[in-house]
Image 1 (spheres, helix red, strand yellow):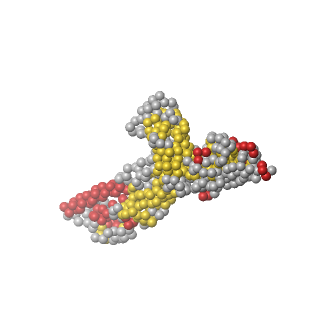
Image 2 (cartoon, chains in turn green, yellow):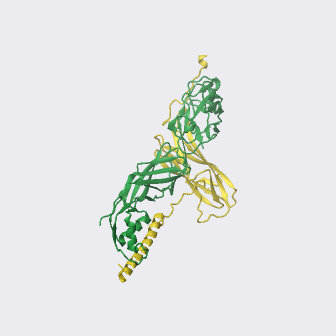
Image 3 (spheres, one colour):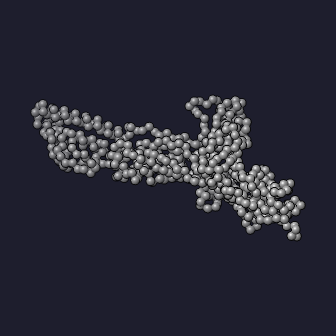
Length: 334
Length: 196
């Protein structure tokens, strides 16, 4: 007995067993059945003839044209394992390896492996991460197979729940998907600042508005938490003389701002307070794709430093002044 | 005049590595957690050092809410090797029986800057959250909530063994069986009475 496949046509004698098969196919939708016009009359004859009397008994069998076309059944995504909570990698990507099982009653070979994909979607559907290069792990049995996909969370992807939605098509293009499992992405506050030190050109005692030569300080948000306005602070310390530690340049003589320009805007910005974290107004660093460009909207803020007023000659002997180690200036975010 | 010009320099050298960076992952979403009076829990924050190429050392200090929060690791300095994102900082929170309605908690992660010359820049991360105190006792089925604003994870529904397709198949099988027996009955009847 040969196996009936999609598109096969069967023609033959309609007996009880065949009739059962026909009814079964019609009701389940497994196959569509078409018959010649004589088919109905044959059935009538089998069950009692045109008189409608069930027990008249005429034919116990008959021959008629009959075409059975086996229709396709869609596949199913039957299992999506739970995934532990994930966290981003600062300024990088985090690989997440996901698995799912798909099945097809038409046989595992009817699953179109190359169509296996997984979407990761935020609960508000605002962000989608797609992987369309899933691979088969193994066929599990005659109707199901296991697939794996590797997706990447970017450092700026929003924290919270993401829906995992694997999907696959069969060879006829019927698709199945499953969005019943979530993965949680933890919030990470991550910052990068460059450079790690500042320098000034030689400054005369009493000089005004000397700006750092190698600012701005770039504050990059390399995580997935927003740093809102007022939550970027600078804790400044007085610069101490290298040879004569009794001499210093007070922290209060410096200002820090997030803009610069021809008139040195940073020199009329926020004055520092020795040893105190001071918020820089209107400075914010939301999560964002830093590679797009230097802009707060992309998660990069700039800070400019100005020595507004150098001490007079009596208080500023020629020597190196520094603030390092425990006295290093601290850029803090929250 | 020349004598008046006294030069000084700052930042004579750049300190390695030229970048200060670190990350801190929170065990909960949002800016508050809920606890019951008399309850104690440990929240584990995770440090990471994935940018640059140097190991870093940080100092962790609880600066607000010391009456209920403390570092549970019995140390304040943490070394975070480059390439690691799994260094835990455990904060123990204990709510007294006579607790207030809520407590603000703040701790700071300060990166220790290298000694050197010039004006060094260091990085600090501040973590602030509020502990809201609830009356009553936590039930066994209501474990400590560490993700207050996260939407609950949707459990995968039980596999639908009786989906539409299966119902149709089973129903059809029953119908077919009935028809089959009717057919056999008719056939038997015809044979018995020789009605062909």
